[in-house]
Image (cartoon, rainbow, N blue to C red; front, side, top):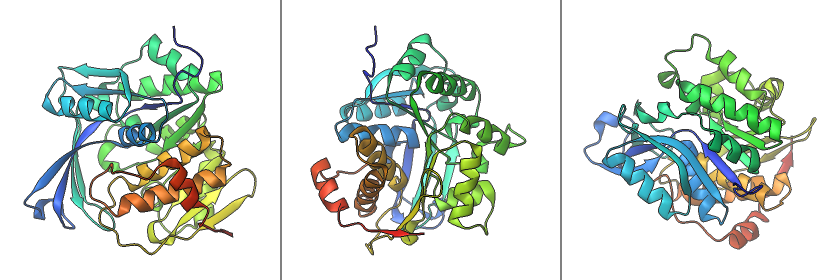
Length: 320
């Protein structure tokens, strides 16, 4: 029997293999050499959060192939419980080909096994008894995983589990839904906290709006807390009511942006799990993201939580 809150975080959704170009390029077809990394937003988040000392489980589906084994072995080494990882012979492990970039990466997604995540009573019970359930728009983009995750979101909300969602929408991964906005709006009725990037906002909701306007749309859908990461322009935070703040980004040399948003997520979620005030959790997320930007690959070594908190005290908020 699963004990109450036996997991602090259950990350549900996509696992895949990232092929990231070894050279900086704007287009994936211009690179000659690629390196392989386990990836996927919810998987990167699970690995980062486990490495920060939290009890984390990953629920996903992989192919019964070499790429699937790479993901399982690597993520498990980072301390993630893989009890809810499913495997299928019907689809290969999902693959992403990404250009290394100091700004916005080009990518190609070859979908596979991540779409095949199936419901189980054991997974629902784990979601009901954990502290936070996390998922993503990518994970919701295909059946049967979509129906599985929506069922788990409803169970989480009913049980009082906090729900976080990354709206990492891209039209290339949503081919079967005529109106993806309606689908995401439906999912957001269960969501407490969301963290879109500004690029996510542009793809989902069009350009030309202010961060405040984008945040209000997510709040209208159901989220209570919206954090918008804006690259060199910093972070916009919108909490309960009209509580909003801006964080200015540090001027750092950016090596690779891949996984920076996932690193930010791990700081926010770890901060919440450690009892931090939400603005302090945002500060921690910013510290971890800026650390990640200095290095190549989606998951990199990071400071201790004590060091993260010390560094985060130097980050100042500005009133909106």
